Image (cartoon, rainbow, N blue to C red; front, side, top):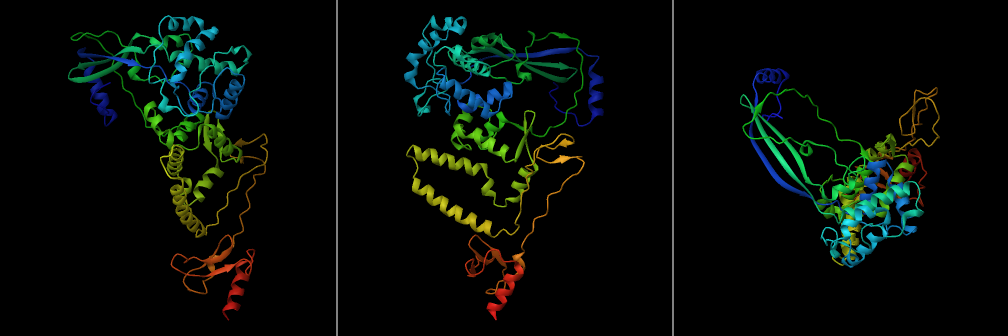
Length: 461
């Protein structure tokens, strides 16, 4: 790529292209830097659900049901975990587990010839609570069928890879020049496959499934000073909006309360600030599907019109704050460890909820969300949110009947208007000190605005 960066206009790019065509490219500098890539972390439930969604399109709920089945058949350990580490007391048991994994004897044999490494990236008591990462138990997987076998194979390879050496490579940067126009290329040369060799026979990189990028390209062995012909070309690109969530990326977003984090170390540190727990995230997503707030479009998860309307109708930002939910989860975890007072947390919630209730009661928009629960019929285009387009008789939801109590002036302060609460009518200026309260026992909640206005006028008279 040209080191000058983007061109401001197609004409400028074309003129530069024509100007350099006649000149050879000269290699000015070659830099090689040794690098190492550690084996991927062991699976916790979320990372397993993400990987299965990426590889096979399985839903989080489907993966949870399958891994639960593997656990009940005693071929893998407890699944509802949020750690990718093993406790140190597991280390002496690992050789025995590996020996019993007879279907994988070929790739396990080299590991058993020497003492297994005891890496802090695998064994760390401080990162393990009640349960450790998901690993095979050593029991024969012969009882497994269909997708259970695929899932077991994924977990088994990840477990074996954890004890293989790092993958060693050379990161190469090449600087070239064509008639004072600079160019740069980056790439990678694998020196020692290490743990990657156990994935060589798979159709794709099962370990990480990284998308190809320029830093991973294999480059030829360039020499400083060499020159030769080249074929320059132009590339026109446009910026793309963020991709829709898949179930895998949504799980990752829930894990970090909406923050997109690729780095495993940072993701580990943010796990305590997520939405839900590993055992509940699949159920949260399924609940949204059942209530028709979201729907699937192939692998993508889309918001239905009902879901969009729901969020638009909530004026209290805290009620839809992923960050706030993450902070609450963090405090609950700290309470578990005795680092935070439960009484203090409850008091904080009382103050916050009191304010939220006041704000919600003063919202007179009286919005309603319509969800079409009718079974979908063939014919017409499905918008995915339960509404059919181009059908023979398009239906339209009936407009809600609203009761406009805000048209009634407060009989006490004569400045505010009437609000309807859960147990009584009140004044919209309650924050400013207006004391009006009309209990439903005396003023029934099903009163129409006209009848309420008449009763208030009579009472005032």
